Length: 287
Image (cartoon, rainbow, N blue to C red; front, side, top):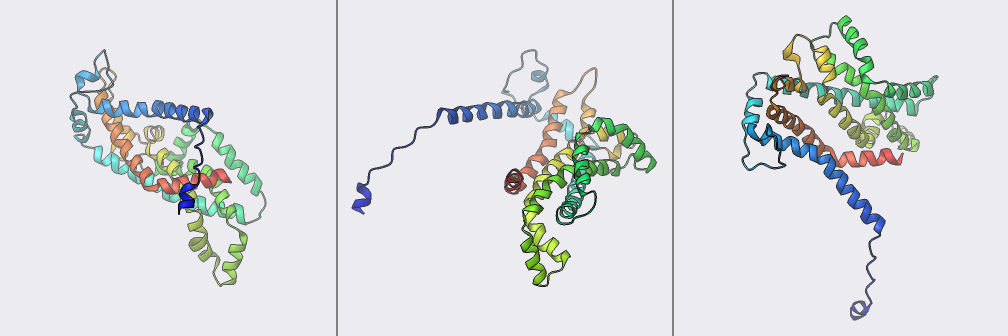
């Protein structure tokens, strides 16, 4: 014990200037990114007089819940919230299952035009959503899906699949084929290997892709505005912002309060999947 105590301590390595600069830059970037969120929440709690003031201040000494009362006082707000939840959850579940099966197929099986199919997935990611809105409108009209939640679910599934398949392909490829052969030798069927062995191994990747699918479907305004024309009962939360935005006299407090309420489910979703998300993104980068 005395010998251990008598050993000289290793001198602490001084911090490298480059690392300190990187940390300082990261803090500045984080503050810049977080400031709009802070201003949104602050404006939601500000009274109307401070919001319309010519000298805005980054604080308030008289917080108020009037903006939130106006938001929750809207008759259709609860329905909008439920519709957004149905659309986002449907997109996440369906796209994750289809992407998992498709990624397994393009990774484990050899078939004609496999490379062409993968290239088409990349090409689909380069097409802007705005350019496809009008063709999708006529397509949904011909299918009789206008003014329904299906008009929002189907396009978001289609747009989220290429990215999800490409990302999950790396996770499926990382699972050694020897594990699959060992499972077959032990008597496992292909379906059992798929759902009881392969699915848990690629689950972090599914969580990572689900986050992007959820955010895209939850915050969608373009499709909701284009495909929900007359039946307001099928509208989603982003459409609720239009209730508070009037060209002559916009209710910025109501807009900020509604935006804050919209952000809460996204934050909850992140908190629930943050561990899986980090491991999933790490696996994707490693691939």
